[in-house]
Length: 417
Image (cartoon, rainbow, N blue to C red; front, side, top):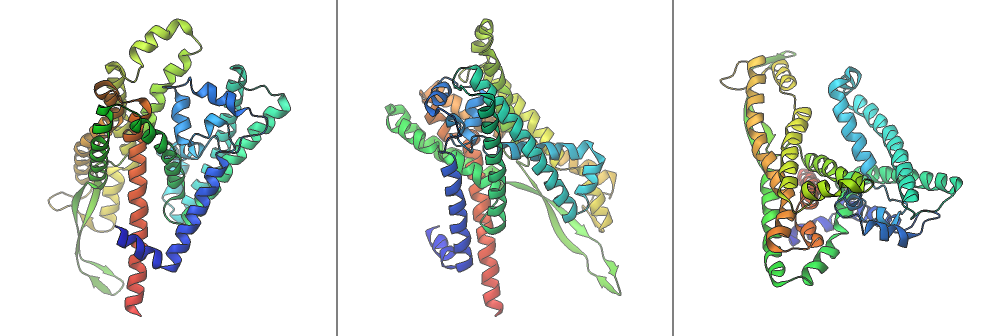
C-alpha cells in the first residue's frame, strides 16, 4: 500500500493532481469555518446541540459541521447532489431529458447545465428556509436586508463548491463532488475517536472490531458483481469481416450506491423535526422514531430496501440494455435476443438487488444496534457505521482506482517509448 502511494508520488503529473486536490479541499474546510455575515455562531451551535435525531443533524453531517455554525459553506454540496438525483429521476418520465441522455456528450453537457441551474434554485430555497427557521427559533436576529445578504452568501457558497468540485474532477484526482462529501464526513472522525477513548471498556474493546468488520463488509459488497456472459456474432464492417467476441456485462450487487440510505435517513428524520413544533405529538415521536427503538429500525430497513429497488430500476433499464445488445449483434448464450433477454436481465437484477438492499439496511442500522447492545455513545456509533462508512469507503475505493488507472497509462506509455 505504502509502496504504491510512493510510486504515485514519484509521477510528476499525478503529484500535481494530488496537491491540487488537497489545495481545493483546504479551501473547502476554510470556508466551513468562516461564518456568514451577521451570524452569532455560538447561538447557532447551541441550537444544534438540541437537534440530535432530526433532519438538521443529518444535513449538518454532510456539510462537515458548517451548518451548525451557519458558515459560508453551510449548505455544503447537498443541493447539487439533490439536483443530480432529481434530474436522474426526471429522465425516466420526461421524454426530452431521455432524448438528451441518448445523444452522448452533448446531451450530458446540456443535462449538467440544467443541474447547475436547479442547484442554484435549491440552494436559494434552502438558505431562505434555514434563515427563517433560525430567526423563528430566536437564534438569528436580522433585518430584511441582512437576511437577503445571508441568503445570497449561502447560495454563492454552494455555487462556489459546485465549481470547486468540477475543478477537482477535471484537474485533480477522483470525483470532486464525492471528495467534498468525503472530506465533510471525515471531520466527524476526531469526535468519534474522542468519544471512543473516553468511553467504557466494552466500547473500547468492540468498537475497533466492529469498525474493521464494517469496512471489510463494505469493500466486499461494493466490489461484488454478477458477470453476465455476452457473445457477439460475426458481422461485416466496411469490407472486413469482424470475428465474434466473448465478453461479459457486470451487474453490481449494490448498484444503487448510498442513495437509498440517504433517502431513508432523511425521511425518517422528518417526523422528529416536525414534532418539535407540536408538543402534543412528542409521545408518539418518542415511541416510534427513536434511534434505539425497534419500530424505527424496522421502518428504516424496509424503506432502504424499497428505495434500493426503486433507484436500481432508475439506474439500469433491462429493455434498453437488451435493445443495445441486439443493435450491436450481441446476445446472452442460451437466451434469445430482444424481450427474452430483457426478461432474463430483469430477473437476474431482481434477485441480485435483494442481498444488496439487505446489506445497506444492515450497515445503516449497525450504529443503533451498537447503542442498544454495547452502550456506545451516539458520536461513537456514528463514526463506525451507517452512511458515513459507506460514503467514505466507496469514495476511497473509487479514488484509488482512478489513481491506479492513471499510473498504468503512464507505465504503458513509457514501455512503448
